[in-house]
Length: 120
Image (cartoon, rainbow, N blue to C red):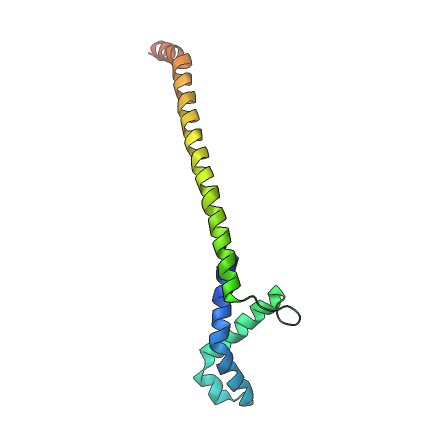
């Protein structure tokens, strides 16, 4: 889910900075243009580098935002199902630990009191 969120963020940044980068490239890499839009150009280059590292570009297209949202929704639904099961297991564990603690007190209680009396 974190990967999908990150990819959505990078795709959004890439879309916002693509026009500025294209104009910068068309200007012949003009230094004055770079100085005016340095943040956008640097962001665009960083996002492009990230996509290249993930293998997008040459033969592999970036997924659409909508397909990422759908995949995220499916994963979120699955997570909610698993979370409810986890909650049940957590409650079961808590009751078992309580029962174990009570059993330990009952079985070891007199011995513990005896050893306290011996210690005095």
